[in-house]
Amino acid sequence: EDQVTQSPEALRLQEGESSSLNCSYTVSGLRGLFWYRQDPGKGPEFLFTLYSAGEEKEKERLKATLTKKESFLHITAPKPEDSATYLCAVSGGSNYKLTFGKGTLLTVNP
Amino acid sequence: SAVISQKPSRDICQRGTSLTIQCQVDSQVTMMFWYRQQPGQSLTLIATANQGSEATYESGFVIDKFPISRPNLTFSTLTVSNMSPEDSSIYLCSVGGASVASNEQFFGPGTRLTVL
Image (cartoon, rainbow over all chains, first blue to last red; front, side):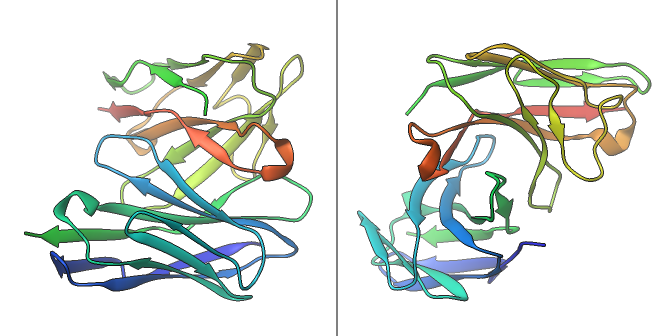
């Protein structure tokens, strides 16, 4: 059974203070690892897909990396508008099911 | 990516009643899914809505409790039947990306359900 564990559960940063969120996973035959952002009262917003170890993707202040066991979402010089819950999910094997972690609640203070 | 809408956005229902949630997409999509997001928990897949055939349910979810329709490639409904307070949750539909091989999913805004 696929499993995803995210840490920390919550993270408070000062504006401009860079940090990383962790996503550890176990999956049989990785089809993709996905990062989403979720704002309160809204559905998850797609950020990145990573397919193989060593792959990296960037979008504005966010950079996602992937190893065989975990993924990191690096946030460089965050701003208050980056405050949200960040969700990690994996898909493996022959189906399209996404297995999600519980997310990391990021708060960036001005 | 596709624009996805859900109705209602929120509802408060009485125990023992049923609620049908609609998911509309602005373009034809092959894959549609229904998820549940309970407070403090991760998103959990309820079922895959298959066009023209019965939905495929995940372990722990049954058709009698969560009947699903998918009459065409742009629309699906999820019914939460005989509700109890434990069904209070956010229900989300998602659609597969432009390429089935990419496996990406895009989510609607969700329906926040409270059962009294």
